[in-house]
Length: 189
Image (cartoon, rainbow, N blue to C red; front, side, top):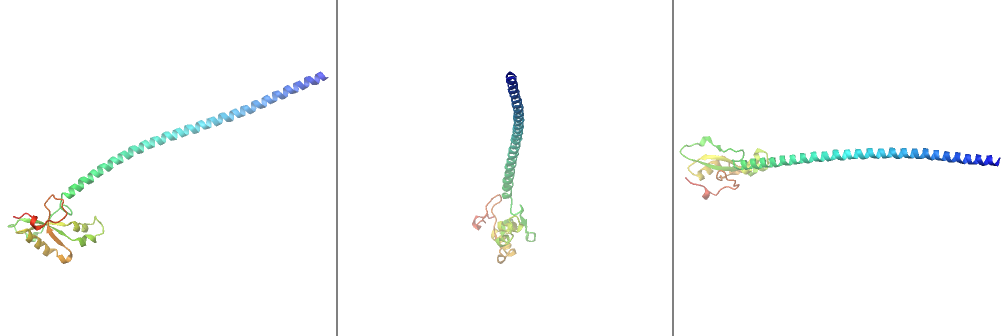
C-alpha cells in the first residue's frame, strides 16, 4: 500500500506538475496574445503617426509653394505700384489733367501753367484718397496771358487768398518738384 500511495503521490505530483505546466502555458499564451495585440496596436499607431507626418509634410510643402506664389504676387504688385506711382508722378496733379480756363482764351498769348493750392480744403478732407485732399498738392491750370505774373494774378483773382488759395508758377512738365517755382526761374517768352 505504501507503494501504491507512493505511486499515487508521484502521479498526483505529476498531475499537479502537468496542471501547472498547462496553467503556465495558458497564462503564457494569454500573455503572448496580449503582447502580440499590444505590438499590433503600437504598429498601427506608428503607421498612423507616419501617415500624419507624411500628410503634414505634404501640407507644409503645399503651403511653402503657396507662400512662394504669394511672395511673387506681392513682388509683382509692388512693381505695379511702383510703375503706377512713377506714372502718377509723371502726370499732372491731381488726376492727370490740366484745365484751361475757356473764358479767358486769347489766341495772341501763349499759355502759362500755374498751380492752385489750398491746404485748408485738403486738411478737412479727412482721407488721403478724398479728392479734396488733392488741393494740398495742387491743381494745374493753363492760363493764356502775356507773362507769368499776369497769369498768376488772373488765377489769384478767381481763387481768392482770403479763402485759403495760393497760386504759384507750376514746375516744368515731367518734374516731380513739390515746391512752386520762383518767378525768376520761369521761362519768359
